[in-house]
Image 1 (cartoon, rainbow, N blue to C red):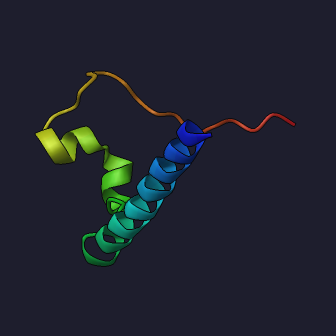
Image 2 (cartoon, rainbow, N blue to C red):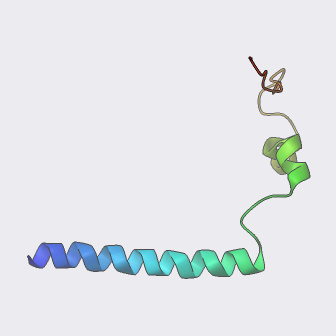
Image 3 (cartoon, one colour):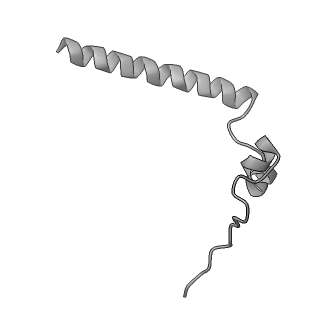
Amino acid sequence: MTQIIGVASVFAWTAVTSLILFGIIKATLGLRVSEEEEIRGLDIGEHGMEAYSGFEMKAPSINI
């Protein structure tokens, strides 16, 4: 029973701390990149070059 209480308390502490920290990050810096950077790719924004040369995302096809 003592171990269950210990595991539960560590889980609760981690969950609460994570929610607080992610809330602060979301309010100040934001958790997402811009829509333009999503489309261009994070490798270009972060490193200035493509990570996989020749890799191209294609629009999904709709099969009816």
